[in-house]
Image (cartoon, rainbow, N blue to C red; front, side, top):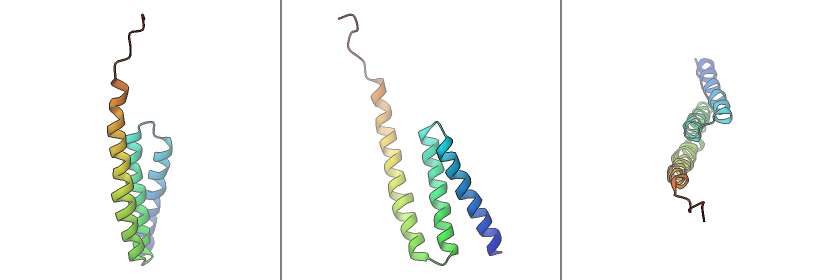
Length: 88
């Protein structure tokens, strides 16, 4: 049973990490990073490192990923600023 759970978590982690590296859309990459970091947290739980899994989920999934998505959503509006008159 543990082998099957390990294989599922490993495939989820490696597959989503691969999608992070090939995705053109940064929002999709961020959500794939969520799956990658959650899979790593699951692997820590499988290794009986409960504290490390909690830190992984709280800091990386809860903090860093939300910060990345927040920064992406804020900076998406910068491209829509009107430019100066090109005829001047």
